[in-house]
Image 1: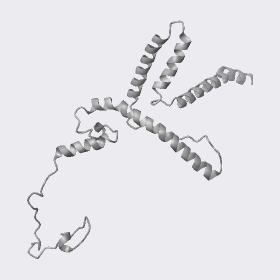
Image 2 (image 1 turned 90 degrees about the vertical axis):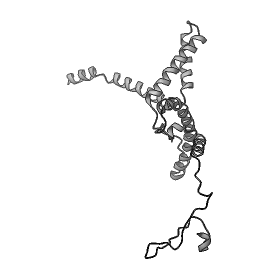
Image 3 (image 1 turned 60 degrees about the horizontal axis):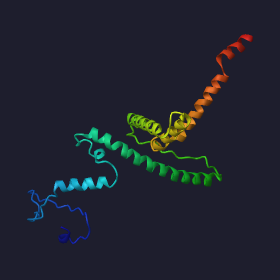
Image 4 (image 1 turned 90 degrees about the horizontal axis):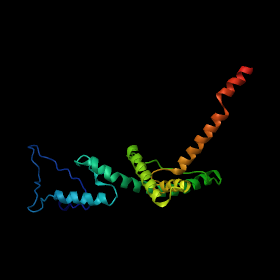
Length: 206
């Protein structure tokens, strides 16, 4: 059609009017050998290769067509989560520097307290994280039993703490957990200082 109408370019739409009898002035036919269908197996293989290059498990894309989707999802979830968290850690540092520069340039300050924290993926399941923590704790205790004797309880406890922080560093934000732990201790101390018994005694004196 482009040759007939002498139009150069791609994706041109041509409107061919009909006559009063409903006939078209031009008949469109497909030549023999050109009416070929792309093999479905080839398309599926190309799709698998394209998805595999993105480090996203194919089960996440074809969740409906997979019969054993649940088992495959569980097997590939932890590996995929680890990659996501590692990439998020790198992006968090870059975004933090960028937003700090934007803020300091806008308000003419030198604030270094701004920190960007990316949220965890939406498919993160608490049960999977809890299972990972339990497995890491069991492994840490087993390794500590091998490395230390029964008389080295303090060293053993410190080793277990450092071991868990090292193994679970990509799953748990230990800096945030340490801050929450410090706040919890401060709240307990504050409650002890503001004992209700002392308050009642002071009220009875008045």
